[in-house]
Length: 105
Image 1 (cartoon, rainbow, N blue to C red):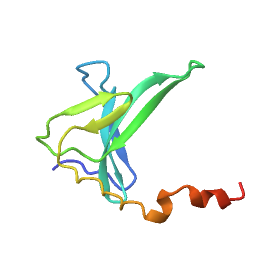
Image 2: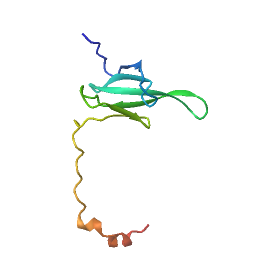
Image 3: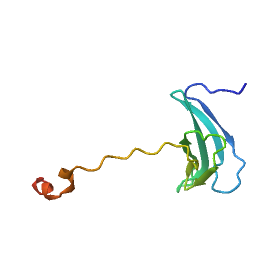
Image 4: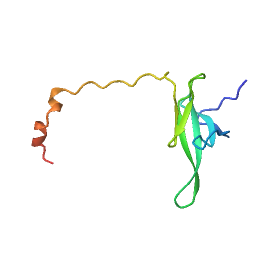
């Protein structure tokens, strides 16, 4: 049986990197009953202080295309995510700037 984290706990493990853009550490954490993947990069601040830069994401589904690491972002490349909701079109009253002339600022 695999180890399961308790609420609010997680773990990171040293990552066997294929390139410099991949995270130095990878792991998981449980928040509000949901497991998230965590990636961490070793960084150095402008003042020379070492720190870990973290990125959390929803877990990838096994068998997805792969993972891209760049610009400090950890994101899956699969098409399994639900599309973002489309906002309703603006109403006619907000399409004109004529109403803005009465604003006191």
